[in-house]
Image (cartoon, rainbow, N blue to C red; front, side):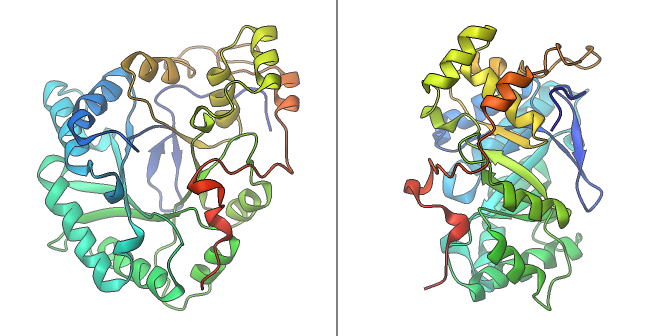
Amino acid sequence: MSNSYNLNKYSTVRLNNGQHIPIAGFGTYLIPAEKAATLVYDALAAGYRHIDTAIAYKNQRQVAQGISKFLQDNPKVQRKDIWFTTKIANQNQGYEETQKAVQQISDETKKFIDYVDLILIHSPKTSAKERLGTYKALQEYVLDPNNRTLNVRSIGVSNYGVEHLEELFHWEGLQVKPVINQLELHPWLPRVELRKYLEEHDVLVEAYSPLTQGYKLDDPELLELSKKYNLGPAEILLKWSYLQGFIVLVKTENPKRIKQNLNVLPDSGERVDGEGKLGLNSEILEALNKPESKVVLTWGGVDPTLYKDR
């Protein structure tokens, strides 16, 4: 792990299918539908080029509207410059139910953004039959981009553990490899072994709740580092995530924080080194190195990556 990376606000990383995803993502979990379009617009205006939603968030349409309005108002930015991710909820899993869900995604977003960059299976907490049925349906859309329902460019998973990934990789019907596993990740839940497995299988890691949903921002050790190095706790945690090589998903309803969170990354062309804007002192990285820690702060404290079928 390096203590500096040459990244900027518009950096992208290559997926295993050749697509490039922006490393800085704006998440819309718990953002009310009536606020979503405006906040997404604000995030894009601040410089985000990656927006994440889900069927379960009940704001897909408004998120797509926000993207559409931004593109209309900013003709220099094209649709291909903005990455749009959504997810199939547990209740929509299974082959036929997923087809209905993709139709819903199409109905709510297609007229605004034309296509979807990435659809994830939101969690493995169903059954093998439903998980694989969902994947079968999703990969059919990728394999047939001219289908009448929706052009889906990439597919992936979220909250999958090694057992769920093994199930998928050993499935004889697999034709389209997952590009991403979106996971809760932060210093108190680094998931070292799972990340190693994903790296070996060329699946990128996307971190949600990198700011621990606020639960750890007053952690004494973090506050001590914050004071010593004159860095905000949130800034330290976001830099930590980027320096792990994660795609980082941050959410906020505060327009000021939208900019602050992105400003952790340098502007395009700005020089970055060990003491630069994205650098973190090695003492901070060492203090936040907690390979054995397994503190789950989402999903009611129950780790979805360890889910076993009933």
